[in-house]
Length: 196
Image (cartoon, rainbow, N blue to C red; front, side):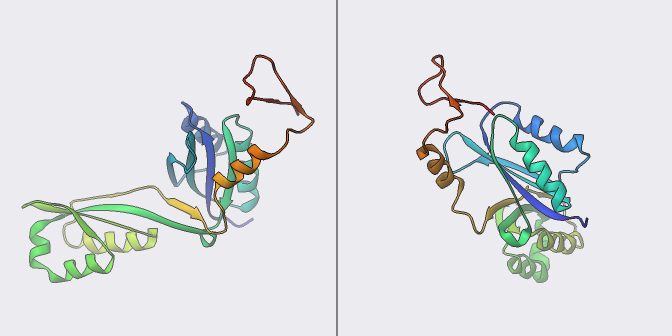
């Protein structure tokens, strides 16, 4: 099976140790995580992980099923780049004198939509967002002009054909309990123990 880049989106409860437990699932299978971002989601108390890997679809499908077995993981999705709107952010520290002397560098930064974040006498910090290839091209160009420092953030992504996890969660909450649900007198009314 041919490998390609996939973005895995996980919705989890906000609990201590989730990053470690999730990364262990990848490391046990010897799968390299190319990018990992975690942040709050649109639902209070639910966090969203965005993980980029290069694997075959079969491996990614099995991996998502395995991740969903974690108690705190609510849902795992995987998508190709074409199915997502995605960006990566980058910061560049460039000597101030290069910007002042080289009009080309200023045009280059404008071309890539970079904006100044910090301006000092000795250096200027620019930020930009885009696809990895665009950031790589800008980095290569700025390296020619004494790029002092560079850092790239992890991918953030939104699934194009998704109504959002919030809607799915609301639909789930409105469903009638299945016959496999066992009420437990020691749990709150909203909490249920699911039997398999």
